[in-house]
Image (tube, rainbow, N blue to C red; front, side, top):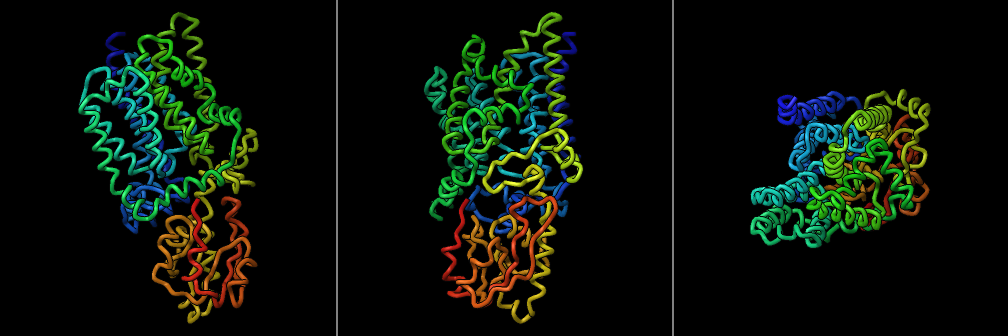
Length: 506
């Protein structure tokens, strides 16, 4: 038994990681490109050190993978790797805490099947890598504290720097960890030279993106302020209840133990700074009206601590029975809701399935009303229909008139879909986020073909408005349907003069 335990501790993490990665790769191409993936591709095709709403790594990655011609599946290779790597890291983290095979298995299983974590890596996005990077930094700090490993501190700085070039929210985790370290005896890490070498490394890696933001007036901060009005404000109790649901109710004892154990278990008291860091992030997310997935990067670490704390309590028939029931319940629940996080079912079957199990899509933004499928699914659908409908309207315009006509979309999803899927269309304009900073993209249009909900709003700025079509796709997000594709003839004043008024940061 001891030999089997040793083999599991050595080979189990890699085997589990490969299984998880293979499962995600098998599903990666089931649907089409997600709204943000389309946008990332277009951004990455315009290489820069930063963009209005994100650092450069994911856009550059998306554009590079898109050029390989592997479609949606190709874009999701990195996220499948991240999913497997998270499971591997969680199990290694448990070993660092002194946990055995059972604790490793519990932590790995939780990271593999928690619905929110599955959903985050189903598409290529900036949030897909947060659970891995946040957990890696926690692991490296604990390793440095417990083993005196200065290399771990330098590596933590490297991870933090790369993470900052993926998503700026790493700042929140760094802030939380700093507060946690200062408040606890582990502040001794701050006195080590390697810590500051790592911090300097993180800053140097993140510097180009910071300078880009500075040069453009920090549009990301403006976007962050606007998000408070865009996101639905959820009261504390429903928010916490939803956290329990999206992370799997049967796994709740694991992460709750992860929050409590460092306060009561002597062997884990050196992890209290991680609990403080997690609470700091929770407060920041609540103050900023953050979405439920903003907290997702915290859970793998809490699963690890909880597994290390609870596994030793599994003794005798009663303990093994309770553990078995818990694991079975967790697996059953995740199996039930997996189609809401991963593209397992076709859209039509998924719609019926959700009705039968009585689960409605979460309304995380004010304009999500009427959604029949989860956003992660709906925003992969309908973009080709959208493009065909706009192309049909475009082709109704006489060729001579098209030469002095621009196309304007009201959000980056529609604009990017037209840029990627469109044939014979000019570069699309939009006031939304990075598209606003690109301006007129070398055009001086006399007319504009605009995709709008209210074409009547255009009349004060047009000599003539003609509706040439409507948008519609069965499973698209509701707010993308029913838009008028309207030709504004004779824009007045010129679109260049109007451009500052079209700015839309959210």
